[in-house]
Image 1 (cartoon, rainbow, N blue to C red):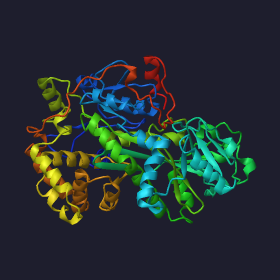
Image 2: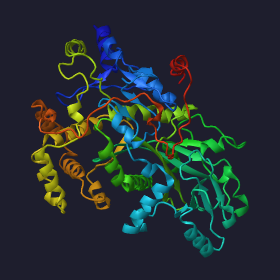
Image 3: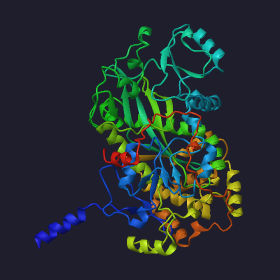
Length: 569
């Protein structure tokens, strides 16, 4: 009997790894469960599902993404129009219309508004002009050449040669083309450039300058849903810092990019994700190092505020482009790499935003940060089984998996468009100026469209892992003043968070009751705005206009090489 008890205890402690995870709500299809490079589901998905779970490779699909999707049941493909997911370069905005309704890509139309250095400055400067430097003065003064040449020359003359400047191409990454200067004649005058005031008083650790790489996931810009990863990278310059002008040509001193400093003779690798040594740390290690002398919660909150305001600076144009070019709310999400420098007062300064941040994992430290990042991200954004099985076959597979209904993707869940009644509700609430007028009433009578948005949101919330939801919260209504016009969905989510953030189970029960009535699937009065068309298998889908991306080309060549590569991590 004692052996039986010990055996049963072991069984109780055993962690189950399912291949699918159910939604919180009835009549909502399950999601593929993603696992990291060293985990797999206990039982593989049935062969009939494995055949239709396809992940299309691009020339930049990172190895850690390949490993994760293969471990989670996807087959890697190169030439297919039946793929369900892809991790690739940014597409031309018009080409988002070519996505099938059950395909998901790692970009959102228009995010170059944040990912290009010149657009980022122009957007933030517009907000700085309207709301003041106290609210939006977290980016160094920037000049976009050649159009700002006269303004820059005037700034040089006022400074009298005492100010340092950093010169960057408008859409490069990985340190390409960057230099620090202090003389007017050091600036090329006729090519597009960004010239930015150099932060010459950085916070130093052991005499070295460093920056932070934050990872930010946006699953939607309307409504705005932002998640901040609780870990990231701390990247050090490999030569101790000096303010002397004679040192400005030393890229290993003044630039923190890994792609530059790894070439330095002084560069020291750090293989341990928990160690505070070498020239690359994790953000968690940095907090441990600083916790006795720095108010870490206050610093983290200042980083959250910087991230939210940065995303808001591009929200208006991105929302317009999303409305114009996306046929389904299922289709898109974006991972941003946000680079921040701390000055000697610990004020965070935004350096740039990458819309294809490198997920290259060359060391155990990189893997420790990026493998769970990818896994959590894919689970949050949620991938359904493509609706490519006939109904009888789907029912058989569903019974085998213990799923009684809705096994596959249902496009009704993600329809873009409103019924006449919903349009009236949107128009009515968007006219309200005071928050108190909508907080209770907007969620009193939930429409099918309201329910669809809220159940997607609540399902996202169950998969946060190491991500922190930073928008919406009960406090983020204070950012509404910065949005260009009222956003109905942000008001809806504000009301929902205010009422249910401490009573999520109560809110979930309300949505469950709506879903049992299949209210969320009622699109009878909604007219689709676009006709869905197949995605062509052509290379010209991708955006030719450059934007900040530090993803290296990780294409491994032949299909056989790809299948071998996913075993290397």
